[in-house]
Structures are given as structure tokens and as C-alpha cells.
Amino acid sequence: MKTLTSLASAARKRAAYRRTLAELDGLSDKVKADLNIDANRARQMAHDAIYG
Image (cartoon, rainbow, N blue to C red; front, side, top):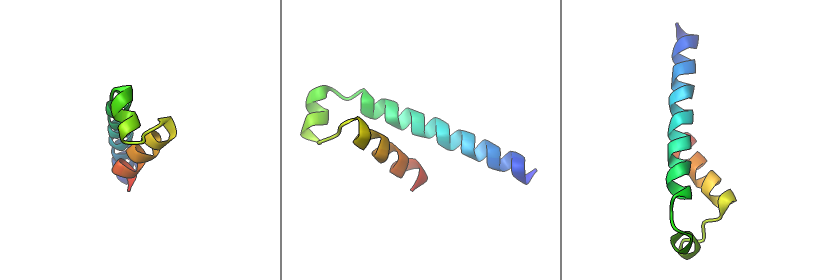
């Protein structure tokens, strides 16, 4: 069961990562420019927010 729990946890984290990245990608270009967020930075921010 531990493996199943680990897989479920990994799937939830991956889904949260994708949602977070989608939110960042959905920001307007102006807001992203103001916050200095490019595609690479958005991926890093989403990763850090979910995985630490």
C-alpha cells in the first residue's frame, strides 16, 4: 500500500504543478513582464511552490 500511496501523492503533486504553471502562464504579458517572469522562471516558480 505504501507504493500506491506514494504514487497517488506524486500524481496529486504533478496535478498541482500543472495547475500552478497554467495559472502563471495565464497571466497577461504585461503582468509577467512587470514581475520578470519568463517561461523558464514560471516553470521554476511552479516547481518550487509544489515540490519545495
